[in-house]
Length: 196
Image (cartoon, rainbow, N blue to C red; front, side, top):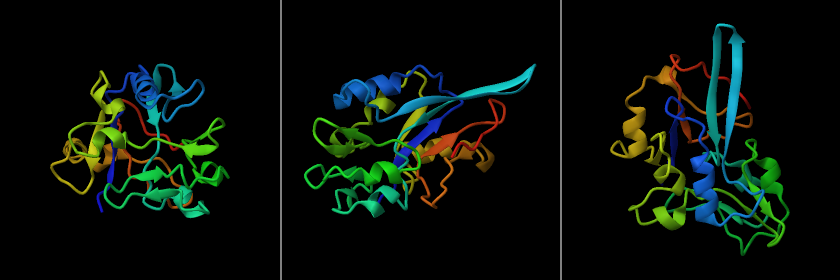
């Protein structure tokens, strides 16, 4: 099964929020609903040695996805072809267990439709392998990459290969979720801070 995910090069992220806006447009999200956010980490340190960086956060495509494990109907599931964690809205009963189980707070609940929703890595665009998710396509800094971690020729693998292990990070996983999303942050830009 593929391990499709995002790689985000924080060294290049300017915090412009284009990923948020393009996601909202592509997925027709109502006011107040977001599948991703850009957090500011810092400032930390003491003058003149101050650090701050932008941290885009969306579904981390966890290997051990708690949202899938707690779903009583199987509405939250991992697609066998793409490996992407998705929601089958026809099976969702609106219990919101998946929202509470996600340690990253990146799921949404549609009050109008009574179902859980989340980032799908734009599966409607990416399923045929010819397009990138909207957030990747519209990132003006070229900070976002999409692909299969197990494919050495994928955009994510090629970008990760440019950096040593000290520059590659994942969000903390308190329950052992093993998130697939990777972040690149060089010490010359800032030092990684564990947030979860």
